[in-house]
Image 1 (tube, rainbow, N blue to C red):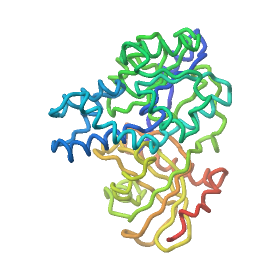
Image 2 (cartoon, rainbow, N blue to C red; image 1 turned 120 degrees about the horizontal axis):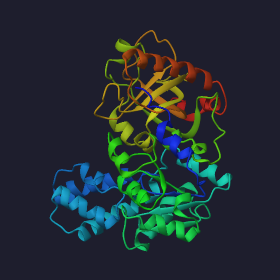
Image 3 (cartoon, helix red, strand yellow; image 1 turned 135 degrees about the vertical axis):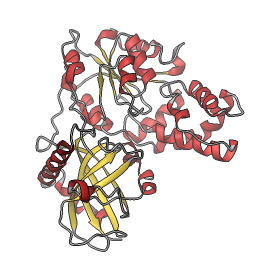
Length: 397
């Protein structure tokens, strides 16, 4: 496990040096602010298995990221060789999608960023390929529906969808702001291409893994692992002021529990940091675990014990080890005399330390992990993190 380079670098320097101040932040919606991608994949998989009896491949959904729903449906039909038209697939999938919109969680850092910009009077708009009827169910659960976005432009409002620039240009026009004074926040290559074609700067939190070059070619100004890594002042916007102990960011609390299973066998053996792994199916049911990635801190409890422990954990693919599957690997900051495989592990996650990434050497990886442990121990003794040690979720059932 590890951290990517801190947000910034050459692209951030270029953004900071841009002569025109940012006057409008334009957000994409799906995959950027709300985690609809998980819903899209689940609906598609269910249709493949129950209606079409064909093998589901995630690439079919990934290839249509950022497109209008009908165009994305056409990609799915083509990629999977489904015996129907794009319109027919769109109508079939719409039933499951509509039923699930209100359950879609906020993407990591989205709630924090929107609240911060709104409190500082930064103008915001929405430019999404989604149909307008879906905005309410997606935005309302997060308190983003009324008055948060100055204008909202949907795919049906313009002639050409992303990657054409129409939707972003229309958002800027409606707000009376020139394109060069707009900053776009996206997740899909098509959206970044659209922002670039519109003459706007863009921040991207890639939905597609291992595709940094693709987003660079699309013209992304800055690539981040999460909106939690964003430093708004890089673009001349008001800086965040909520960092705890200079290293940790408070997050929307999320909770998960399950039976401890054997993991990769490398935590204790390789790096002296044994982890208590949870089954993949438990993680799949936790929306926050599905959309989060990075190094987090929080509290843990085990089995029938009421005692709580400080913990630090990796969420993601562990780039140093090149995992094929996403994992959550908590390390409890306590010396245990024996293993506790089979015990129920309860986790309350409340803070974010840093993003994942690979390292140039094993020694650098170990040094970063040791630093994580020190930082976790420090900040969990501070508010607002300390209060979560009393979370009822940590009590044995």
